[in-house]
Length: 213
Ligand code: PRP
Image 1 (tube, rainbow, N blue to C red):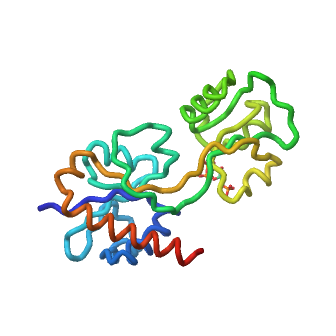
Image 2 (tube, rainbow, N blue to C red):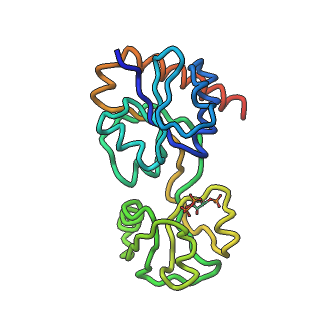
Image 3 (cartoon, rainbow, N blue to C red):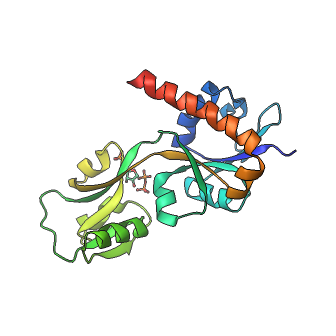
């Protein structure tokens, strides 16, 4: 049988993820190797990891190129994939928020710059605010500083980017963290392999949460 394939994001999240995998007793020494390989396999051949851009993880899982994946709630909310959400890993914690220049008066029909057009559109629509949402790819905090928008909707982690650009949180939309997701068909077909893995990861997450509190 082919190895269970897990799509994981390269970068910040993967560094936090590896200790959880190790604590769950998974053979992830391949992820500690400093190379440019995009497919890595555990030494016993039971697990295969795909190293992806974070935004691409759910796409690989939805199409079945990976059985499981680790994806931010922000990406899942924005693009609404057809996946099972198995476990909140509680890593990469941050929040989705509305921010504005400190003290700025916001018009009744604000223009909002964001990488998360759907989240922003739904959020303002639910509040009866007729916002004009403008899509930008990054450096979102710049938009209200130069007249592109009155507000932004973006991820706030430490708050440093907002502070250093003289912006402030006006409203919190939702908390964000990384979730373990599964392809719906593979979850049913490979349930016997996936379920124990989820249990081990859940125990590692619970132990990590307990040790922090
Ligand atoms: C993210 C996010 C904010 C920043 C928030 O940007 O879009 O800009 O991090 O983090 P902070 O609250 O700790 O300052 P990212 O670094 O991913 O780059 P981007 O602006 O290109 O999206």
